[in-house]
Picture (cartoon, rainbow, N blue to C red):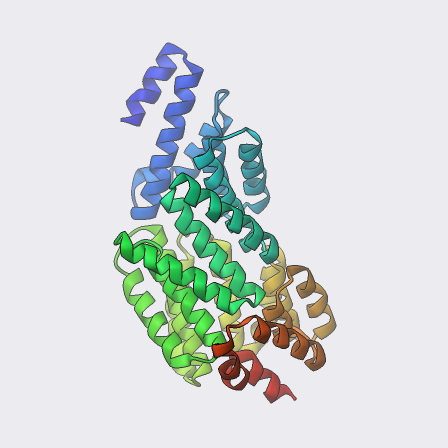
Length: 360
């Protein structure tokens, strides 16, 4: 329906109608990418988004679409520009809520975790006020990730638990595998390896239920989530097999491909420590302080790793890369942020407390 509308708008030389038709066609392509990675329309999503944003009568929603596709394709600076332009264009409340969610997700993927938590908190409030469910789920998902990255593991569990309840209440499948993979990460950090592995295995099963790029991306992260559990359980062989199984997915045009590539390289470095230089080069190319700090620490460059990690404001990252004294102080902050009922267990069997004990 949008293609004839676009043709009519151009025949009438109506810039406003042309901009609207281009934008609707772009959003249709964006959602086609979500559900069918092979469709011709899905393959044109980025091209249509840029056309819609460049149209003389483009609306803030067209800028949001362009920003979202730029973010998917790894153009973080271009995405940031589009989101800020959309917010400056006085969008309606629902569109502003969506823009805040998209911006918060971008900040999370830029390893600006504290800024991400703040903006995503604003987005969640705005989405609840306007009743925008899908942007609310997106904002909650990335808020949970930002909290976990900062070391607020209890906050991550609460946010992701509330999101799971919404998915159950509305019987929604999208994001479910991603939430379970992220919860598996949090429980791995807390030392609950059996629970983490169950979640990761379930995420892997659920991610394979569709053919869209979102499912492919969730499959890749679920594979690496199970591999991470295997590594912590001493099962190097299965971890290596799962990491290798993820390689063909990296050849696809996945959403947030750069983050998937970094995560895969980080797991590979733990299997093959001599790959740390490759992780460092990739992290710098992808502008990721988190993965750069991890690579530097594995190369024995502790002071430089700490220098890179500090601006992320992540106690979790600092506890992993810093020298023992500074790592202990960061771990103490992570522990104090936990609900009281989780503190003792974390101190005795959490991933990083055990790692620090082995180092000292």
